[in-house]
Length: 200
Image (cartoon, rainbow, N blue to C red; front, side, top):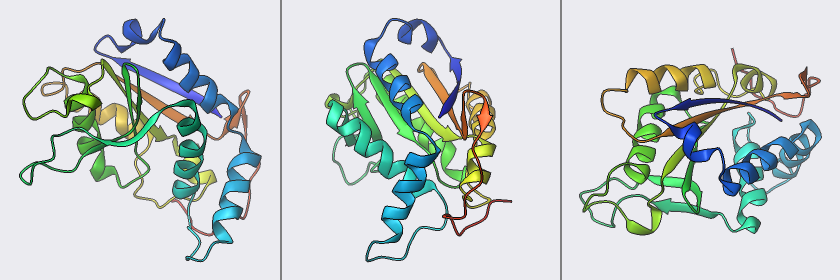
């Protein structure tokens, strides 16, 4: 899987020499067409209705790859209080917090603010174990969205960059945006019919 990276607010300087960052990039690079297709086929044979687009297969695959490498999954960013939203990091390890967004574009601001809470200035509301130095937002490119027939409302790499720029007056945390692309060594993946949904 080819990965495009857009850095902001000094994330490139913080991540340049971080072994965990390079481990994340190498893990994403190992995902190829056949791996994602195989995961979708496995999910389609399960007891529940098979997912239409590639969102669930991608998320499931990331958990299966990162969790065995000691990445903590699904950790809250706020202290457990009824008045605070249940926002969570998808993964975090060492100084890096990761949020995966394969949802409606309307969720992007929430995902960016989740990273702001985790990687921004300390506060009484922040859950200490999830505090990190830099955030990473993983989103599909328009090509991956189309290839895996995600819903047309799913946010893309371009959407994430635009919202990160648009929220620059309220975001101070260093955040890298990663676009997950349906390509290997520059070549677009061959089409498949295992995803019954459609992106427009």
